[in-house]
Length: 148
Image 1 (tube, rainbow, N blue to C red):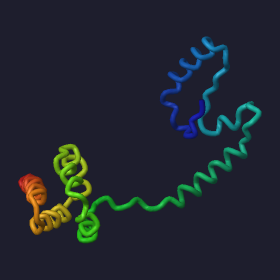
Image 2 (image 1 turned 120 degrees about the vertical axis):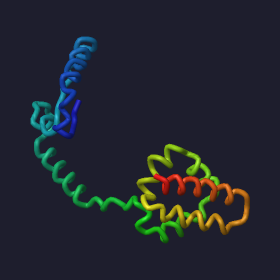
Image 3 (image 1 turned 90 degrees about the vertical axis):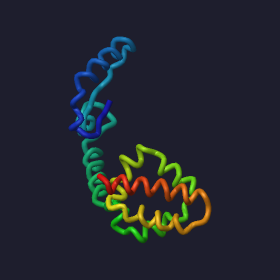
Image 4 (image 1 turned 135 degrees about the vertical axis):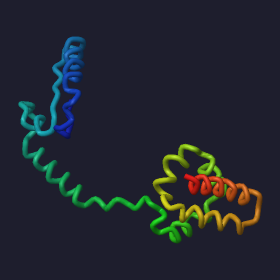
């Protein structure tokens, strides 16, 4: 068993105990390695140069990762609104009736409620009972947030 990250040793004793059971039950010789230990071992297929090359590639990969995308949709409310306003009413109904999403996700992605207010105004201008219903969900949500 090999953990690429050598800092993941907190369960080492557990794995060693389980490996002893495997050795006894299957008559095999299991090994436990962390980080470069695998490449420094006496196993014939591994070479420390491979480990060093792996670290180099991991560092290059880390340096080329894109920046984290912005998850606060209210920072660019108008653009986000224009992107999502034409989603199916079914999608909105599922979102607005899911308490877990409303309590855990909405405060993160709609921290200032700007997009939600834009959606509320948009729904008021649409025809059909579903838009009245969606507007009601949003109004309840927004007035509850304003009260807290």
